[in-house]
Image 1 (cartoon, rainbow, N blue to C red):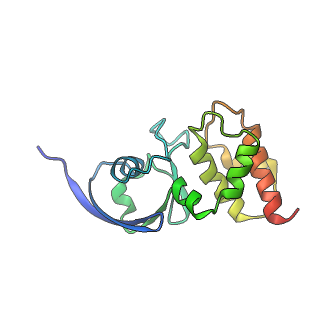
Image 2 (image 1 turned 120 degrees about the vertical axis):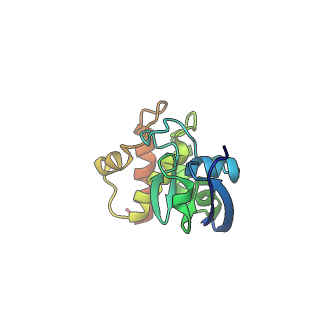
Length: 160
């Protein structure tokens, strides 16, 4: 019995991609296995931890909950794309300065999720930052350093 497949076309980190994929392959597995983009991590496989977070058509989504075939026609951006474009260089520098990336496993998802909040602009609000990151788990930092990094990036971007 052969596995059912489908052809998909999407843009990943600005590059047009056409592939035939198993219809049951999750987006994060497609990115890691088919495109060798290993920045997004697979951990809980239930959408709880946020390690697999990527952008799809501008919104942060859990790559373990979305099938690759659902991304057909979409624009997907991974941590590699955000880093290569320089979009999150200031946020990454703040993570580094505060040691907010200890083991690093959650970091790609944390940075993508944080970038969504930082891009929305506004005044840094620690409670809003905590709320926005509440779906991302980190076992190393205790979150304080991550929240500090996001807050400082927001302050610098807003000029406050």
